[in-house]
Image (cartoon, one colour):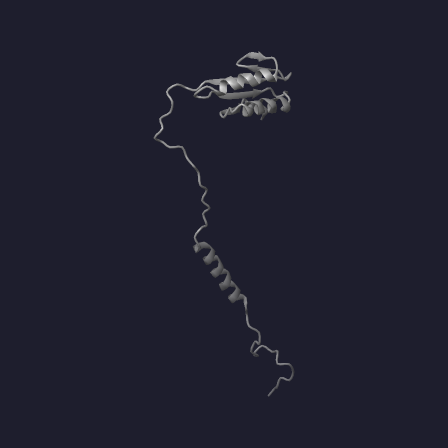
Length: 140
């Protein structure tokens, strides 16, 4: 009969360490189930939407077309504006109307940003509230 002498690390010896792989697998499955079953946090954004009981106006609003050309000249509905002081007077008159007209500003691609900013600032100073920049598709 043979006897094994030594550390006892043969094939028939019991393992002395615990196998943690199944425990980690179970923990991962539980974490995934927890994440899936938690309700999704929804962040509500409060929006003041327009009331539907106000019918739209029957007459379309007046539109003022302002063009800033490549040489930074300004035109009001096709009529050249000599200077910014004249533009201010035009805005002052138009801001008193009820309903206030819409201002559509179109700038040539080579126009200076400073001139366009001065037109926008002039409209804002004179309480024009309905402004928009049109013709931006040529900048894309």
